[in-house]
Amino acid sequence: YVPDTGPRVRVNQVGYLPGGPKNATVVTTATDALPWQLRSASGAVLAAGTSTPHGVDAASGQNVQTIDFSAYRTPGAGLTLTVDGETSHPFDISGTLYDRLRADSLQFFYAQRSGIAIDGDLIGAEYARPAGHLGIAPNQGDTSVPCQPGVCDYSLDVRGGWYDAGDHGKYVVNGGIATYQLLNTFERTKTAATAGGGTALGDGTLRVPERGNGVPDVLDEARWELEFLLRMQVPAGRPLAGMAHHKIHDRNWTGLPLQPEDDPQPRELHPPSTAATLNLAAVAAQCARLFAPYDAAFATRCATAAKTAYAAAEANPTRYASPADSTGGGPYDDQNVTDEFYWAAVELYLTTGSSAYLADLTASPHHTGDVFDPRGFGWQSVAALGRLDLATVPNGLPAAELARIRASVTAAADAYLAESGRQAYGHPMPGDAGSYFWGGNSNIINNAVVMATAFDLTRDAKYRDGAVRAMDYLLGRNALNISYVTGWGEHAAENQHSRIFGHQLDPSLPKPPAGSLAGGPNAALQDPFAAQLLAGCRPMFCYVDDINSYATNEVAINWNSALAWIASFLADQGDA
Ligand code: 9MR
Image (cartoon, rainbow, N blue to C red; front, side):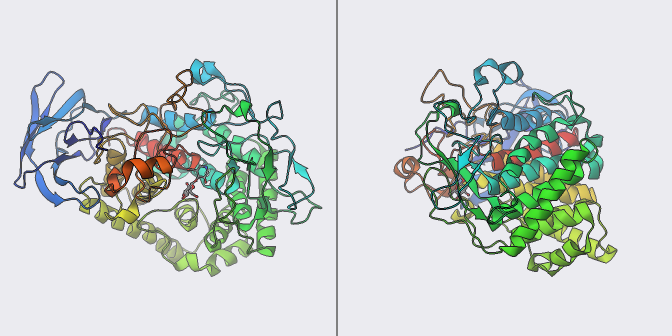
């Protein structure tokens, strides 16, 4: 299988910020530097220079050279780059490139909502659908969901929330990091000087049913999931009260496509887990401080749930979700929850200022350890979330301690920058196959989030440039010459694995909405379709834009939350 990778000149197909870095990569047999020309839409040469030979790139196996046209800063549309007789896909230079991506990436969450009819007037007629999983036949949930046999003897109303990904499952662990990133996208507007006071994320900025209610729309969207997460908490008086059930999903896997309202499977609550409970504690603590100005009663509910959950996790510190629990839904298993304890203690400390939480976070090995993995953070490793929030959200840590925390963020950003400098395609990930794993595109973005946070802390432009280069990779500057974001770029992913957006299998159904991020190359080829089609692939080629490849090409809330965070950051940079 040889994919069509289009022109050998690889650019960010969306474009470049006027004052930002402008890098491209050409695949070539040449080993000596090559001349390049930047051209206007009408073909006039706007700038010219010579490329820098890179040699063979480990992740793609390609001989490549890199191009830097950062010195050209004039806005324009339909520009192209010509090198070695090849002309790139067209792109823009503009300070408003990322404005709509901020909205699109956040809009994805509305399209994933469970338990509410999706309004086509808000996001397009093709996305309109009835409410799913409200107990209306053939649905069997989620208004009164029993536990799996033997797990508990009650049922819970766990309606609402977002469908996790291409399936109809709802998982507290993954809901946690996704909600955190949406809430943090908002919280950043209070702490970062370039965030413009948050007007771009205010009320009326998203197409959600709650617009116009006086609450910033990104908070409305996050609340849709928060209400679900709160419902997953074991009620008082029950065994393990205060813990959160790990997940709720179908008893058996369903086929594709399948609209949520047509899902006939029994729905089941799975056992409470320590990790889920700490995810609930962390995001409910964020909720308490961020909703306080808008809805005091909800903020109080969140605060109570957070404290109760944290106490329940302390009383049950080793209830791990089973890696074998993967029938009808994914496992989201995790045998090490020390990072979840740290993250939850940090969020509770930031919200309450209480010395008990301060003592817990200070005693955590993650407080002094290196929490920034070269391959990024994610749903299973969340210590970085706590560290980033301690570095940015006002708190009472002693000045020297705060300085150390912030220095750890800039040191990590320096390491990601250095890695980006080593990569032929400029993204912040080591070049070996181990960097290309399930959902790895989100880890690349999360490394960019660390660089962006270093920029917010220092205003040193090199960190912002590192974040921009990570987006260049995701929007087309890569071995496959593909943008991994639907609707963004000349040649973009559009057949992601999704039961809802099943256009590839049923043309009457929509494609994923603009702003949907694909999981990305996965060298482990963990689905049968990719395993058969892509056997022997070089890591950066282990991806296919086909609905059958759930291990390389799914959509997921925790991946889009990373995209939303970085798109919002970049939109704030404007002309940079
Ligand atoms: O994103 C998850 C990835 O890190 C795991 O390796 C993979 C296998 O356990 O599961 C991914 O999460 C999936 C979840 O289990 C079920 N819903 C779809 C998620 C995205 O593929």
